[in-house]
Image: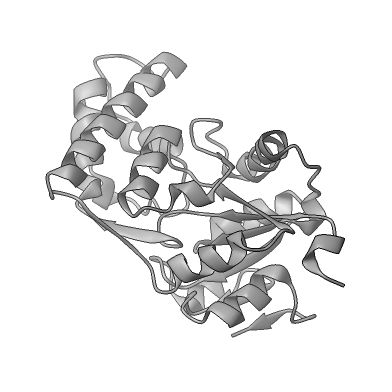
Length: 244
């Protein structure tokens, strides 16, 4: 049976630590937080990987009185605009460097060629800042839609948001049971399972392989560098769960 004969499936990628890495973006986040909320953050003081940006803000503001008051939707929107602008300027000026992780361009190209696959994003990044990062490495055009920290501070909500938005954008019915989340943190695995989706984890982020092995991911890979292996894992064509 060819790929054109089966129902389409959604492949939802996390961004940081899965598709790409960046250097200097934490400082941009801290400075933008100070300009909007009047309190300078310290992103290095917490483990933000897998958290949504609203959760990160809440953690950094915990117990600290911000001159602007609590984080309201309006303030979050202002922060998103300020962070996206600052990040884009920093990338253009070379103060932030963004690069794709091993095998990512090749894997996205291979997935994009398949008629039975629709590509989406599921990330804790705010939507505008996610676009800046994807644009910085030239891969945003691969993705039809996504679920972002702008949509909800609750990570487990985002795969469902991404799937519904992807359905609307591609005008194709997509089932959660045929969807897979590709990420690099325990948060990705738990969010996938909360939505009845498969999960492939890669140990290319800040979590070690040993830390990820305790999660119930269907597949755990060292990285996405082997395109054929990554394709088999993501599309479930191995026929079994494995740790490769």
